[in-house]
Length: 599
Image (cartoon, rainbow, N blue to C red; front, side, top):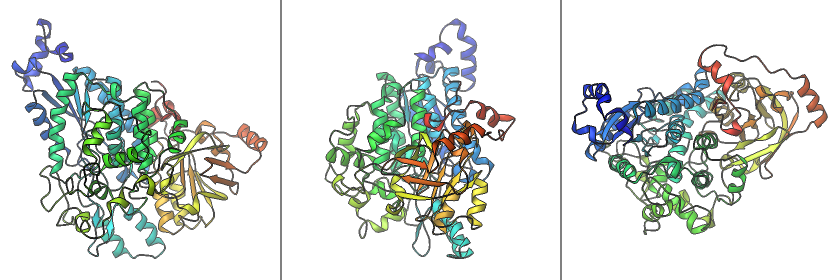
């Protein structure tokens, strides 16, 4: 065993002495050492219950024959970090988490690893770290949050609160109504209830093959999640026995499967940024150009908030991720790579066969939803629905599972929910969540209204500087320029809340929250700080967006753009000391996943 390096032989007597201090017995020295990489913290709703989950999983691994060792990574809540300097630390934290996983696994010679992430950068950070270490690994997340329900019956989520701020500015609602939304939007532990980045990544782990079926959609408060945790504790020991490692699973074909799912369900644009970084650490060649090829063949058959009114609990009721993949198999038989290995020890096709409820004659499932009695490994607020998940009340009346997860023949669109745009504004590409764009905004041309930071943009939008027809430009927010490529949920939510989402577009070298919807184009590469064309835009320049044609251009002659580029002087780095100064010096383009250059 790999762990024999720290526990076998006369020279390891000091090591064994230290291990005995933490409760390891002589009998344990002959068993596999299993690291449990948790990410518990009190400040993230998706992680506040993971102390209980970690202890339970630890017990399950022990019962399955392993010797479990629990440790934690850091975690940043993107929602709480949103709209201030804290968001600049979110994407860089991914690198710290990956480095922490690598450090703990290599220093302590674990034989296997069970990862418990849930939100934002923690999931990709752990995937990156495990790809480097390449020991048998399984992911089991903390599960999604319940959707909120106000006393009047309105279904709400975190994005409802952000949009409520914009609605208050335009007197569409009053402060009491905003407070009601605020109080009910986040009623339980778990990753925020829409198909934002956290839930997108947890769902992608199923298609990628690194998590068990149900990982992305069984609610955090559902008692059925305990069965998932128990199975994970048992299955990691089987993976160790079979010597199935992350790089056996995370191949280019498996990454295709993950991105196909993302496009089929209209997931977050951030998934692309993270998948490129994961591929980099898994030593798998993969680039943005592949996305348009896959998108052209992948129908968008599922939409979840913020792209529509469904939430992850609705998706679970309609069958979950394996049912989305099952519909793709029925409607596009040659699209997925069904022979890709997964952590079940079976190929993806077998997982779909076993867990696609429609293939087994069902249309709706109650399993995986929270009931009036919630899981003992979870927590909820006093504003949570007393009867459990809000979707339960609709299952017998107006819930249509075949609208939540559509057939290929009835797809929202014949092409996927993500697109890569190229042009003289984005020579290395930009990304847009097409599933969240109104048909009216698929093509748009308008004058540039330029802001040099997200904070400046928020003030300008709320201050009335943006009018119908404009193209909002937020620059110097890329990996190096921001630094940290902070998410643009606040400005996009303000635009929507003010009723401008079908009249304005927004482009940036930064990125958007998984909660963003509308004609919002991010990851423009090269970024302004690296001399990209977005840095030389001037107020009033006409910008033309043609999403069906995959193009993003400014209507300025190339000779003039070249002259502007020659005169351009990038702004000074915003941070001169500390972690963000180091990150600024090492970060690469969003088109390569914003990985650090020294790797």
